[in-house]
Length: 116
Length: 113
Image (cartoon, rainbow over all chains, first blue to last red; front, side):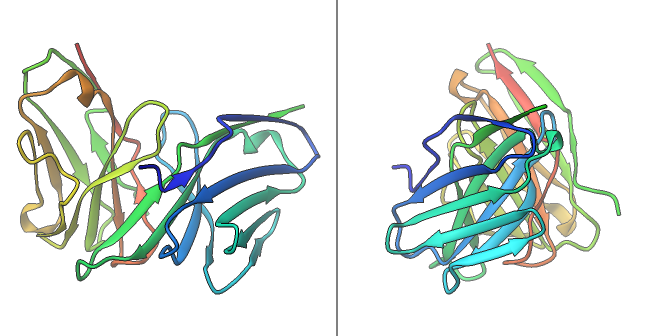
């Protein structure tokens, strides 16, 4: 079962406009959410995160919003730049029943293309 | 600071052959993870090490996959024998400790023919 879903495989946005990437989850035990960015032939790199006790976290051009009742989070990039073109993964984690374990569950990813 | 190193970057094998991947985490990182990323999907955790001990291998197909982290530094992931459905990118990640930011290596792209 897919506990974290990114329903848009791709998104194309004009440079300077806002990019909004969406993510839905089903497991109400998830308590921490992260966004990763991935360029071709590179590993994912951490972008921004949010705890379940918050509904918004901002870092420069990047803002993540969390709606716990809807089990939905989104990543806003404003303004979008050509260098933002990459695949973005949403991930979620919960306290593992296994002591000392941390498990991240990733969505399928959304390919963002910023057009000049 | 050097990042997570992985080798080889690419590997092509025939089904039923064996293959091994190597990972060198960031110096000082106690926690090491192996992920499998099948085309069109997100990374899926296979195994987590804390120093040289296995913390969670619940999603590792143990009939064909094995991993070790001798001396608590480098790690190897082995598949024996490989199946067509093992074609994927195998990502290694490390973190200073459990719960801290995970840093990913560039991955090894495996193609099984």
